[in-house]
Amino acid sequence: MRAELLQLAADLARRREPFVLAMVVRREPYSSAHAGDMAIITADGAYHGWLGGNCTQPTVRREARLALADGKPRLVSLSPDPKSQERPGVTALPMTCHSGGSVEIYLEPMLPPPQLWILGESPCARALARLSEVMGYGVERAPAPGTAQAPVFAVIATMGENDEQSLAAAIAARCPYIAVVASRKRFAEMCEALLERGIPREALDQVHNPAGLDIGARLPEEVALSILAEIVEHRRAQPRSAPVDVPASATDPVCGMTVEVATARHRATHAGHEYFFCNPRCREKFLADPVRFLAA
Image 1 (spheres, rainbow, N blue to C red):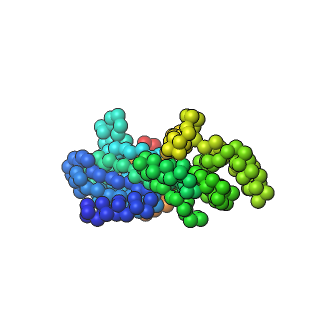
Image 2 (image 1 turned 90 degrees about the vertical axis):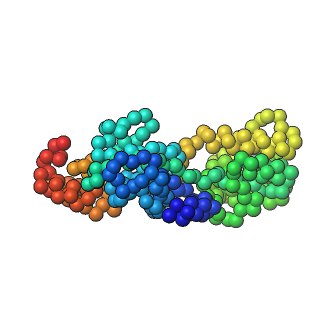
């Protein structure tokens, strides 16, 4: 199981798909999960591996999607008495399996590195490609149309060869950062040409020119450094997240567990309101005395 999960993690990383690597780090009897048990949860909610039975899966799946959304790891404690597990750095949530055990699960979001398009074969473009790879960016030197995977940063360093076409492609891909390595005069000519083609002025106003931070760069390597520094500045100013849909959820009125509404198998209607349950026993208890649980 572990080898298969590690291979899956490698495959997802190679395809630049975000996922969460989850591992049981602590348990208290009686729980079907054991320390070291692992699972991978992808952005669409697919669940691979074992972290315990049905009592843990819905909560882990939801917390994994939240981790992908904010890019932050988290330690989740699932227990019949979540208040007893509350401490700094721990998300304590209820779990009411018949076993009565507790489990702590660490979730690490694995987000793909940012993608950098470098268009052109100038010395600056080659220097930027070398430096960007050292910094962990996914570098594309000749990206095909429609292959953008957010976030994508684009640097146009074509130096007179297909300048307008390259800039238009970057704008069409909705890159959050676009820089053009060219003089102000040449950049103005490019903008005029693209305006005539119907590119909005607002899109052109977002393009960085001169490219990079003003550090007095002269050599191609120095210009590349200034551009990468500007990209880092832009990245850190934005919220770190992956595009993830977190499904609507409800609280089981009997045990307090979080239940995903769309996939909930156990439901009941009382006084015109629909309630959702983690298992059939909670539903039966609720139907036997709904006033008791709603009052609580």
